[in-house]
Every structure is written in structure tokens, then in C-alpha cells.
Length: 586
Image (cartoon, rainbow, N blue to C red):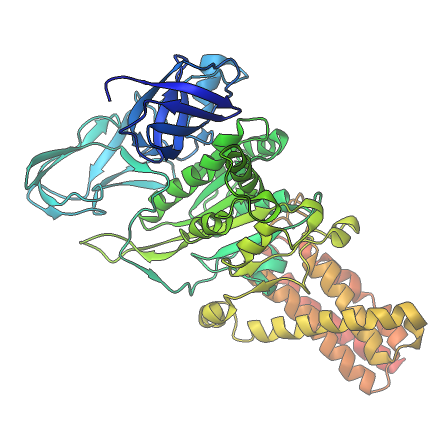
């Protein structure tokens, strides 16, 4: 289009422009001579309704609107890892150098550093046939991440040139002879954020994604390529759980989206991650992390884009064969951004003012997760993208439309309870209301690689906790002393499970992360104590004496045992046997 459009209405982040015939849905435009970035979200004849990703104050009727002719896209290539982007993939460190502490309107910066050189090592040779998704070679992006340079989707042919050496991301590293001529390939791929990246087929998730958090791994596990939802009221620990998962989850790449949350929470991530050491690789966690920050004081329209930006970056690394975990905190703020834009468009509101398409948008986001067979003609590689979304319903109301729409598509539900949080039990995940639908799928892997009675212990522990819940009402009415000895033992062991196993301190040097081997030994020891106590009760042992046993302190200290000393947990069973023998003798 030769002539620019013209603004006829401004309503907050929504701008209406005329003379926009020839434009398409979701095309990027630049509003006014300040070149504010926006996206077309509705078309009506030659009118275009544009959501602007920056503050529109001072923009007036009659100012021009310039078309770009392409949708909102992200740049994918070396340099993405360790980056901190805003919702539309502008690098915040680069913008800080340009404008200072606050982002100036209309400021732009390339998502990938155009000056840095990367050492490229080819994986193909001249004359090889390649197609979309095949590896041309790799660069060592960090000490632990090999960044594979892939043939862009839709291109196939014979390699007529392949280079080796140090190159900028914009330099040609290969030439592929296609039907219509030669195609020059550099290290940058561009991909529209609202379009899922292709793959060959999706596979059933059958491998657990261990998190280092005992209540999750033992009772409500998530699979690689799975989806999970963490709803809870204000102050229940959603953000801390998301931080814990981002730190310790068993994934090779982490994409963390701070979507509409407080700026100080993102600051915590930025301050902590470079200092924290990955327990597997021994290098800082930031070496495998991408951060997307769209805090609550940033323009609301960009909040809606931030989720798509993050999931597209995550899919890109999944296509390399990596296991990727994406944390979105929180999808409620994303939904609120949709509600605001929908209201300004004067669309028919759905439940609680959210747009009628809320459920479809949430489903399309979570459906981009999965364990997939990647596009490739030369190898059988698979990758996994796991999505964990926090939801912040008003007042912790789980009937909120965002929670209900999320629960319809995710398979793991970690329900946070204010009651647990206020009693200082963290993570405040309710063991009675939460669930996981991945247990059957991962059972074979866990029983072969962890222990064959893993799920038997899980079922026994859950039975004790459920029995405790039933007994609580009786205790409130008649007191603990009125209960039978077996019931008092249930309460005693359930308390041990809650305080010594489920309770986990995020800021404790040792307890912040618990390996799956340590988790198994801990719960095995507690249930061994329960079985021994039940046996000795049948021999008329005194329940009061059992409740005062000194080994209780050693069981409580299991969580402080370091990884290299994990064998000490096995010795506690001998102490249990010895102390029970002395009770009988007395």
C-alpha cells in the first residue's frame, strides 16, 4: 500500500485507522510518526482496529499508520539463551543502554546481537540433501547448550556451500540449491508467534519431569511434554513455586514469562538466576534460561503478546530435540489483557466480562505443549515442551472462568490453599484437592528407574493423609485422647508426612531441591516407621511412648541431609528398630 492509513479513533491501547485496505489480520503496523508498534486485531472494510503495544498518550486523530506487511514475528538464533526480553522480544538490556531505566516510546532494538561472532561447526557437507528441520551445524551458545542451526521450514534441496568458522548471525553460512535457484542460509530464523511451529507427530508423554519438589514429584507428577495449572489466592506462593520449578526442573531449557506480575518478582529472578548453580551441570542457571518480562506497569497490550513470544521461543528449542519447560506467571493477567482489548472492541462479553473466545485462546496456548517427533530427514530426534501456568483467580475462587477454562485442557492441577499458606506450610499445595493424570503414563519408567514399589508407597502415604482428614472432625469434637491407638498413630504419622516430607523450604540451602532418590528414601523411612509402629501396637506397645520416641527428631532432619550423604537416611531404619525394641523391653 503506497499511502499510509490515518487514525480516526484512539481508545487507550486500541487505535482505529482508515484507508487500511490491503492489510491483513495480525499484521504489524507502526502508529504515528513515533512509530509505536501495534497489531491489527479486527478489520472492517477499510478500517483496521489496532492494539498498540506501547503507551498511546499524545497520539491524536489524523496521524499516520504505516503497514509492515507481516505478522508479529520473533527472531530465533544464537544469543536467545540468557537474554531478557519484553513481551514483543525487545532486549531489555540493550534498551536500558539506549534509554535508561524507563523504556522510551517507539524505541527499537534487534532481538539478536548483530555484532557478536559465533563459532559455527558444520554437520553436513557439500552435496548432501537436506530439508526443513535438518541440522546444518551448531554453535556452542553456552557451556551446556549446543545451539543447532536448522534448515528453515519449507526449504529442501542440495547443499551447494557450507562454511566453517566465526560468523555473525546475519552472515551466510550455507547455500542450498532449491528448485527455483540458490537459497542463502544464515543463523536467524523468523517465525510468526501465533502460528505453532510444525513437527512430524505428537507422542504420548511417558517420561516424568522431575522438579525437585517432593509434594509434586511424589504425589502429583508432571510428564515431559505435559501441562500443569497452579491456581491459588494472593499470598499462597504461586510465584515462588514457579521460581522453584524454573530453578530445579529436569529440563534442558527454561523459558520464564513474567506476564503482568509485579516488577520486584521479576527482579528476584534476575538477581537469583545468575548466582544459582544448576545441580546437574554445575554452571549458573541463567546459562539455560530465557526470560520474558512484561510486568504490571508495562503496556497491557504487550502482555497478550508475551505469552505467544515465549511459547514460540520454547518450540524452537524443542525442535532441536531439547526438553523445554515454560513457566507462565500468570495467565490470569494475560486473560485480563484480552478482556480489556475485547471491551474496547465492543465485542459481546462472555462470563465475567471475558471474551467469548477465552477458552479457545487458553486451549490453543496449552495445546502447543507436548512430546513430539521433530522435523528431520536424517535422524529420529524427539523434543518435549512442558507448559506450567500460574492462575490468579480473584479471592482464590476456583470457579473463575480462567481457572475453569484452564482445567479443561491441562492434566495436572496443583491447588494452592490459603489455609496452608497462612499456617506457614509451603509449598501450599493441597494434597486432598490436587491431581495428576500422568501417573499411569509414567508408571513404567518410574518403577524401572527409581524403585518398583514407588507408587505403592505413594498410595499408602496418600491413604494416611486422607484418613487424617477424616479424623480431624472427630478430634475437634472429642479430643485426641478419645481416639483409639491405631487412629492416634495415623494422626502422628500424617503429621510426620506433612512436616517432614511435604513441607519444603524454598530458601534453605539443602532443602530447596530434593532428588528423586532422596524423596524415595525419605518417604520409605517414614512409612517404615508407620509399619513398625503398627506392628508394635499389636504387641500392646504404648502409643504415648511411640509418640515420644527420639528417632522422630532424626526423621525430621532427613530433609537437611546433603546429596553426598544420602546413605545416612538408610541408617535411620536401624535406629527405629533399636528404639522400638527398647519400648517393648520397658
